[in-house]
Length: 151
Image 1: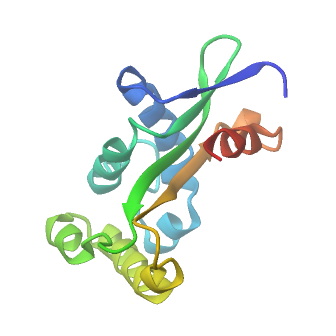
Image 2 (image 1 turned 120 degrees about the vertical axis):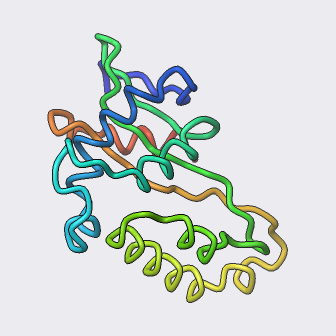
């Protein structure tokens, strides 16, 4: 694909990435819609906002158009196989009842995955936390490029 570059997300990109996420992932993610979380760009989605900000710098990647606009993002994190996320701690600090439903679903998914049994010799794994592409750039290979860079 021409016209875009793939770069690591830097601390300075945080606000622009968050704007992209608010107008894409926050309002279009089917699970968010199902539980009634983040119905519009202007909704205050504190829990999801904090979650995304925590994962941004490090091994996340952004797609940038020729004008310097961030048009896609793949938020990645390294997770411990043997010491998984403490979902109960996350639930205890979660404000939104709708977001608590999402965290509970993730907790069930995580316990069913049994990653430590599947990968007994591994300590960590790369986890794709979420992905978003600007509506004007969808179906043009942006996410494919972000995935390729992540690999």
